[in-house]
Each structure stands twice: as structure tokens, then as C-alpha cells.
Image (cartoon, rainbow, N blue to C red):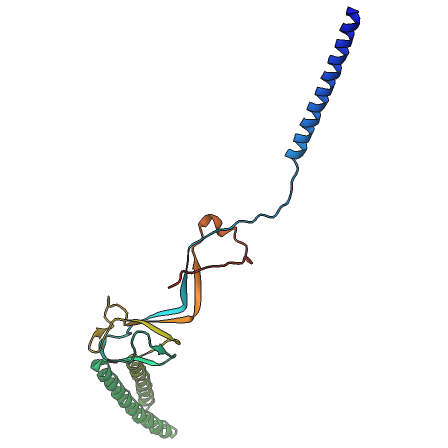
Length: 233
């Protein structure tokens, strides 16, 4: 009886051990299977980032040359069109220099006409052998070329001062609204360190500037949909 009991106990123990071992092996296989199974799932992540709305175009208007403001045609809040006159400057020295350069250009043109006429007469006379010396012909030609170069230089100077005169009229670079103005008639403008005369912005089209952390810059898809909200004013 005792031997039979012992044999039965050993069989039961062996069965329990075998079942336990099979369960353990099955669990280990399942863990290994789960550990190395790759699954593709959609990842959704929402970022709340600070941003600001800016006008599509914005320009700070400065004077290209130094002078005194004769008049200012616009004020804060005014709607302006492209090339509309915003302000006029007074710079008498620029006007005087242009007049002087223009007079020199006319003088150089008169000298060239005289030189060219003299050169043509000498050239015609030189067709008859022995009438005009070759040295005189060369000298006349060189004098005419020098007067031609002087005329080109005088005209370039006059055109430069004419362009400076155009800077006395300040115009709007694009359609927009005047959002700031810091000058009045009589102010000296155009010198170094001076603040802009005024600011013009184009608010009907806005630009959204988002401050994205560097760690996310390369991870933002090109076709991502961005929504934004603003505080009521």
C-alpha cells in the first residue's frame, strides 16, 4: 500500500512538473514572439507653439539724402497707394549742384561741336596733298576725342545730380497703411543715426510666423495642416 502510494505520488509530481514546464516554455515563447513583433500604427502628436501674425509687407521709410522736410502728406492710419507722394524735402545745395553740372554739360557739348567742326575742316583740307601737316591732323583729332570724353563725363555728373533731385520726393513703395510717423515739417532728415520718417505696412495679407523648437524642425511634414487662434482685441 505504501509502495503504491509512493508510486502514485511520483506520477502526480511528474505530471505537475511536466505541465508546469510546458506552461513556462509556452510563456517564454509568447514573450519572445511579442518582443520581436513590429507593428505599424499611426502616431498623432499635437504641439501648441507660440506664433505671431505680421503684415505681408512692411517698410521703414528713410530719406536717401540729407535735407529738411518741406511737407508731410500723410499721417498714422492713412491708406496710401504705390508711388503716392508721402513727403517732400528741401536741399538747395543739391538743386544748385544739378544746375552747375547741367551748365558744364552744355559747355562741354559746345566745345565738342566746335572741335568736331574744326576736325572736319582739317580732314577735308588734308585730302589735298601738302595743305595740312600730318601732326596737325593728329593733334586736331586728339583734341576732338578729348572734348568728346569731357562731354560724357559732364553728362554723367548732371544725370547723377538729377537722380539726387528725384530723392527729394519720397513716395510709397507699395499699397498699404501708415502705421507710424516720427517727423514733422522742418525736421532735418537723412543724416546718420536718424530714426525712420514713417512706417508703411500692408495688412490685407498677413504672414504667420511660428516659433518651432529646433528638435522639431526636421520632423514637421511638408503637408501638415496648421490651425491657429488669436486673442480677441
